[in-house]
Image (cartoon, rainbow, N blue to C red; front, side, top):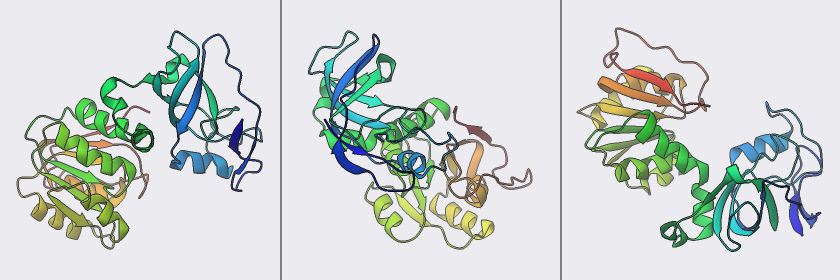
Length: 270
């Protein structure tokens, strides 16, 4: 088969011949039709991942969409989403013609999802799952509640805007960096977009309160740091902030005296 093969950490993969994967007893052999490049792929390929360096060469690709060839009680030709551990453990991923994953890492796609292009499903991927679960499961979003989406120009943030709408949110406000991030966030049609300027908690908090005059019931936060601090000051009493990461910082300071301090800050399960 052909694959994108990583021969050296920190270098780009090359399109090359690679041995066909062989499924074990619980393995599912999938013919890949689309696979996204996500930040975890880049981190693992750099050789600086917290998972450590993996044996080379290997095929990256931690997510993909394709059709079942054989294995584990799935009908050949079934359309599926797969998650791999490429770069996190030794072994190959989804940037190839064929990929083997355990049955537990395969998600069959229903007839409704089958109407969506493979590339679109792959691009949505686990970012969409993270956004949906953070709002509906972790935050317990209720119909009519207002949502602030931090990092709204990123993959999770963009997905969260649509997920909030689909789950019946009231007002949805996107928060992101200037430039291309604004265009990406605005394309998802939030009620408003607030641009993040220089680090200034008070200034950003005031901008968020103007954009969300009835305050935010839920904050989806893949950013943390000073941006999350500002967001808590625009939250309603008993609001919920769900943290999924720390692209701005891995620490933040919250004041019990700040407006909106009667809120719940809850990390997602990792």
